[in-house]
Length: 289
Image (cartoon, rainbow, N blue to C red):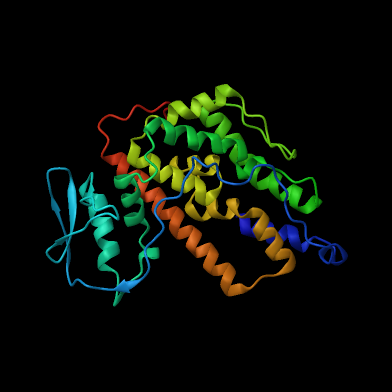
């Protein structure tokens, strides 16, 4: 739907306008907060050293076996996940590797390593507050004042998601063209803090990863609530880039690679959160569907 609307809108732009200088977005604090860290950086490629991959249940959860070796994290911790489904998903990543282990394709393994080692040593409360702080620089809350075609595109595609989030969580979010971004009420932040507190620490690591990929807490919540698909969330997070590409062209293979990689990382994070949430006992949801 988004891509079709974008192409339709672009086709209505006069040719003379299309040859104006490109508009690059200037925002306020667009850099990731220092307390919103990325997970482990994937290791360099190496030759596959195992034949078989299996899982087994240990005292602390489910473990991954590479032949007769126990998989461990970068810090040497025994690789143990909270449920069988997640263990099977991680084992599939390892089993699908060919002659060379491409760690950059193993997003679930990377997320599990981050949750197990917690390299930045953050508490659950710190993870939650870092995620909510990103609301102040949320991608879909920053709007352009020109060109008109992009302004209309943002309104048509981003406004419905903001409205959905406001109704879903009973909050006020809004949007702004100011370089400082929208003024988010404290009550809105408190609501998201309470909602995120219903997730366990493992799931919160996955949510943080989703947010850093999409540059949006709102889009991440839309994915978790199944209001958006991965493809929709990724396209919405790249709305301005897609506009510029349709307007000025692109290096096709590079663009396609970036989009596929972003989809893969976002999909893995979404799956990770859902699988980690399955292992929770009783999950107190703030709102009911």
